[in-house]
Length: 334
Image (cartoon, rainbow, N blue to C red):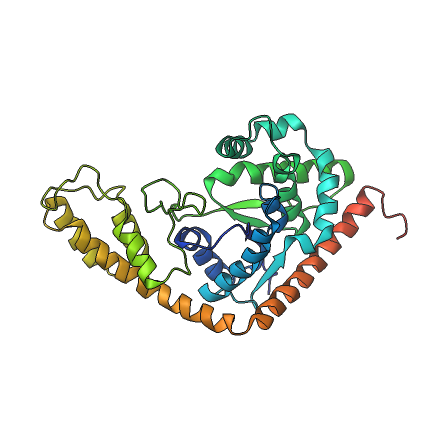
């Protein structure tokens, strides 16, 4: 039997998981864990780069992430969940890799430029935030990941990791696997306000832990077709959040087609479609809510899963660091 390829993926623990996370990554992780050796990194150190003034927020959200992972079907027997800060070798590797990349290369990285602009840092960029692509490269290379699932906006990060690996291997001999991207085929789920991205910070998300009443309330406020004044007006279904969500979460394609046809002809109002969508989303979320309640009754088990996964992950990175120290001649004592 051939050895499984290794995947590294993860999240910053800065808030609750939402439907956008499920569509964009969680659903994929559940299916990938059967085919690949999957490591999931809870990137708390990277979360601190722009949340350094609120570490309690990061700590609280680690447990929230774990409960979410387990509730959607991530199996700790198949996927290894690791806390970044508890693998100090990743920080050590980050320092070595800082010599493999220039300030100019970081400044040219379009992902970094975009995020700096979004956060309004301008000249006041924290060094930790500016250099987090190097930390991200250390994560990928430290785990010797063959594949990294990403969206198109993250491709520059993977290419930078590949360049660092290539340069290190060229200087010191074959040490790192050159990672490849695994592009997600699932489109990004828009926010309930119609904005391109569902986001915790924009407060436009339906969270996996939302109650049925909260889901209904959010769906009823959902942005639809701004050109449609009355329910009898012909409506647009393209780029309409109502129908984007229906197509993402409803299995009855005939019902979707019926709604779309009636909507375009002005024969169904937003309220009827919204009520049906809320029902569909709550049917989808209810098993996740129930599983979460079960895990919440046994937090010691959840913590044990995380501790065991972190220990296993650290063992992998320690093996990599033995190779790195040998390559850069810092293995002074064997």
